[in-house]
Amino acid sequence: MRRSRSVIALLASATVLAAGGVAGCGGSGGGASNASVVTPQQYTQQLNGSPAPLADLHRRGGDVTGSKSDLDAQIRALRGYPIVINAWAHWCEPCKAELPFFQKASLRYGTKVAFLGLNVDDSTGSARSFIAEYPLPYPNFEDPKSAVFRSLGGSAGLPTTFFLDRTGKVVFPHQGQFRNEDDLLAAIRRYSL
Image (cartoon, rainbow, N blue to C red; front, top):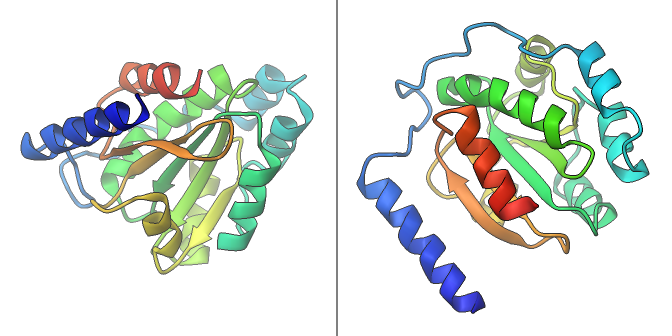
């Protein structure tokens, strides 16, 4: 059964790639129409009362810090919760285009699902400026040489979103930009709930 899911996921990824569905950075994904769809005040109100491990993430919203070992420790601390890791860079237009979807999804599911960011192949200063403009209620870990990205199974550029099960194992890497908020929400329901 597990092998069948892996084969299906691999075939689905190959189909998306063959159809030109991966919008790599610099592609025609377009930027977000406004810097912040959701404000930090809305996060605080909506996510109030989250379980302690998730509330800790919300308190660290907007952080851009850490390393592979910090991310590994964070994933271990989140055992029992599904995790969504969005890999992005400030210079990636498709990343900017889908960021409002992650803002809204984390607001909707942030009391049940752990959201994390992975800043790939980027400078700390640029990443922090970007997150100040596009606030997120979860921390973002730095991956300046793409080593973490590759260790999670990333291979086709940014953006890529990794869905991890409650044990911290990657169950599906979504490569490329989500076309709309509904597609992201459907993936969260399928792989995280």
